[in-house]
Image (tube, rainbow over all chains, first blue to last red; front, side):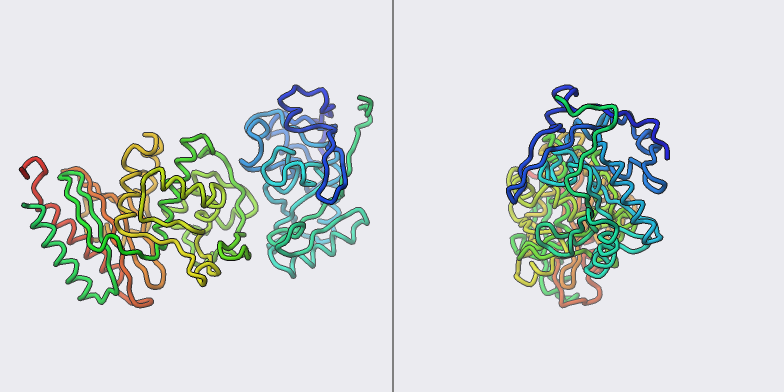
Length: 198
Length: 286
């Protein structure tokens, strides 16, 4: 696992223009009245080459979990460094476990890993802004776009840990229909060398 | 005088072609930029726009680029999942009806907006069209058409939205409307760079069995076809090295799946060409 490029930083020490977009440690109210703190600690990624070389788990590179489209804030899209929450390493671990169970390549969609709170899809209201969620659009040769495939692989993902949440197939909010959404809730990770003190 | 003669002759010839080929209806609009000659045969009749509506989407995409709302080099998430304009129900477009299989291979990943625009026009990709329309928004695209003063093109939804079709929510256009759409593209509505790029995309059209088929080999056409079960259209800007271009919109309607539809459009294209090449330049008309 190549992780020597991983440089943890405290988001509160970023320059203002990044802090405005990433909102490190800020509270965000959910639709059901719950309140959660957005990630504060990030890995700083210097280039796409780095992102492709950083293997968070045997079958998952960091690049797969940070690919976004033009709905991302321009500053976070077009230039480096990029920042991803440190907890992304635990998401990669979950995906590796999932891959082992399904015994087939697992494909994460664009916008399907970490998205910043400034991303036009979901924004800070999306758990993707925590870096704990992944949208799997394909397992092996199977596209996950119907109730059967999403149900089958969702059950496998849910069996991996009580901490894993899987969205059911459907058209409503919190349901999916062209991918399998799995997440670890509003988890965060403070690297050993960092301090939670402000 | 010459224009009147051409107009009368063309009118008669096109009516005869429609009758001979058993077209249920035809609508033709023409603007010759060499002479200023304009012609319209039932140019205000509404037709199902079929894939000619993609030219309206193309205009909206490039207008958005000119306005800084997007960059053509931006990447967009490719997903085959759309929501009906009728009731919000889910629908997907069919890969079998799309000439751009490579785009389906990108599902889940990203593709550049410029590549989507190219696929939407040159391969008439329904997937690309819906992705782009979803991204810029139907309301924005309609606003662009209004700003371009394009009347006669009603963009209401994405393509292959069968739920909307069943409720008669369709994209519709008149020949006059589509002519004004192409005129807006050729005019100064877009920046010169965008105009060049839009025309370049239209020139790379892969389906050439209609307007181009009725023209001599040295003609080049920036165009877009549109076909559904009953509709068969082609709209384009015809470039001939010896003269200024002309713009033509040829819309036809037939009984479902009737054969010879494209040949009819090609014959209309040929009739237009022959008529115009006999027309005297505008400076000699007075």
